[in-house]
Image (cartoon, rainbow, N blue to C red; front, side):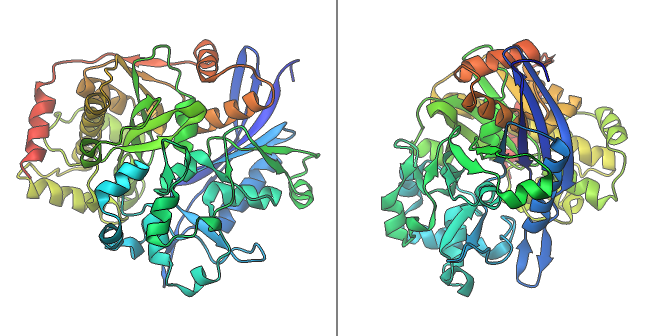
Length: 482
């Protein structure tokens, strides 16, 4: 390894797959390579939908073994879900999947005690039926929860197994709907009113804080020579992805694409207005005192589920065929909770088109084009709404994550937003994870400096908008009539 270059292992857990990436970072270099990738397949058991967290941990250990010598390890993953530990630190069953049905109707029960408007004013978190707050409320009456001594969000659970040390990383904690985004600490008022014991959570950590060292058993299983420190990163994968946006200007929007699309702005303070709540924008915490002001959009989940239902056809061919389908013939609301659950996705998209009086997609290419047009339209609405609600205009949209591989989606997003789209890193979450570790271990610079390093060292693709806004406004109007 070159002088001044250090290696960092990024454990990056997505909703459909996990990966261990190795980042080699120097004063003027950033290289990212994949050590190991493994599936993340939820399992439906009699009591509901569960994460196979032991398989995930096994994949992490395999990945660290493949990574070879590293100077640090960091873990990021999806938000809201958690594991319960008993008083001995043992896991009480597999964590519940956020797409499980146990939270149906729970939000209304919570709002009877803390009205939705007051909850938003206190925490700034959008309504989603699977928010941690609602999951904890649903779990409170169970025998399993009665035995719980700790609640660990998924990245913190994996970190605990690697190190034996407990902590709750802040960027992910902010998604629980139990953190005040102004003080960046727990909202004791909300917790007290809802009877939630904040003592179940381990102490808060900041990105860059030490999170322990790999246990001797982990070293033995992975073949790594200790000590190997574990560093807290932006453990919500979106926080890490936003850190890896190669922004060269201040007035930018971002879209982090994958199973979900997260579209919004990076702000210095939360937006807690009633208008913001009604627009279902969320205020999640980011690096260096920033706020990720964004809207959750169902994302490429729609296409992933269709591809699964179709038996796994060639995606490249499907996208080429979709590019030849006339634009905006039919669109659906990509934020609709009707698309949250797995199964029957092509039929549900057809039903939504039929219900809104639009042509029903008849072929796989037409369904695919409907999905991509719908995602671009949702990106447009989120970017426009964020600018209006935060009173902050933007000049460019940065798109990172799995959607960067989909040139048609990138171009449609530029067309819909009427703004240039700059596609950055596909593995943005892992890249941000690595950069936070590198900074914690001696790479100088604040967040803008890390982004300048990305601009100097990473390839980007620019998409220029085509056509006017008229067709997109017309498509929006069709959805509004529903």
